[in-house]
Length: 264
Length: 329
Image (cartoon, rainbow over all chains, first blue to last red):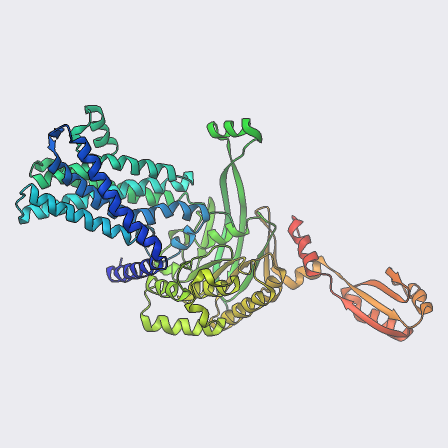
């Protein structure tokens, strides 16, 4: 693998995606407005939950806003990269255009995971970052190197887990052809990530930690922000992220052996 | 001696297919219990293709032509047998192998829909690790050969099918592959666009000595490009050889239409051993075997007063139609 080549190709991906999106100005504008309204709506919903309670699952409103901030960043990443690319896998398999991807002298997972970009997702990432900065201020969090590096590690792990989950589901398309519903279910589960894990019952907590690791995606990075997280949890998140990444990669390579291409 | 670039030995491929009974009951049954059966779509085929050859794959819909092409370029894993393309096992899809081949499908496109083709060309160039200057040189060379220029800067969605196909070809050939797999490349194109595409492929083959494997339902594509054809019938090879020989074999007679100056001469023709196929006044149609055309014409010109004469080849589509339904040729 030649990293220079991959960087060059990725630059081209960015260029062509931006150029494609900019062909439709109104669509970009609508996407941007949707992102802002969605964040306002989410904060409003959260404030309703906290109206009659000082805390939910030991989390106060100001602290819960951190989860919302991380969720907004992850949702922005989902909308920028995962949604435009991973949803296309279904289309590639159904229409047989995966043929073109597989015949290129480049890693097929790299190609289908990063070819497109939705620029309006960037705004969500920016909004999430702004919300996090606001939370740092109101929660009087002390910014230092270990805090920043731990936050970065846990958020990166969250992105890896989210990507792997989505990619894993999309890969099953090779057998089942249509799996749009499954990715939609995953997206709905992600909404759960806007609330602290402690606010759910014990059985749901187990479900969201073991089967669909939402807990790892938003709650652990938020705990790092508040200095509540224990090192074993961070280590566990790193291990989970690695296991998910490796498994999704192996699963993709395994699935390709069963690819039968679409008829002409 | 020209070396083989493609070697296929005892190749077979089976797919699991599910069948559904008609009606609501059948649909519900199909939803819960899916009955699948293994369908052998390619049955123990072997062939070799030499470097620089243009080979046409002929067969009815569903005969297995596209499956063979897809196995040759490494998209589908064979169930049995071996394939070697340019010394590589295609399904491993090694980078060096992928740089040598290309697949062009008439009904599928790889160009970015909302952008001008030139953007897709540069994207492909970066994937094939070409620098900007080399990419520019190749785009110029191929666009000259394909006779496209302004179209390179117009969004793909606004191009005609013919212009789009030319751009698809350019995108697929930017890495200068030496093996081309073409699956119905002229599908849906008008007569002029088809002719231009054939002209380009001939030129590309001549200039680069590239090997071309082609499937097409347009017989003109086959007759003007391919010296050799491989006929596929129900997943087996029913004929592998020269197209001319096949046509002669399947159509051993030519049709001769003779216009006599008088009706009397027309009546006397039977006395010389010709079997009359059709007669309208002084116009008579006879069938003559290919190997006796010269002697038959000599007899006719020496003994009759002829106003006009036409020698007709049987329609190629009719002959090829016979190939598609024959198990053994």
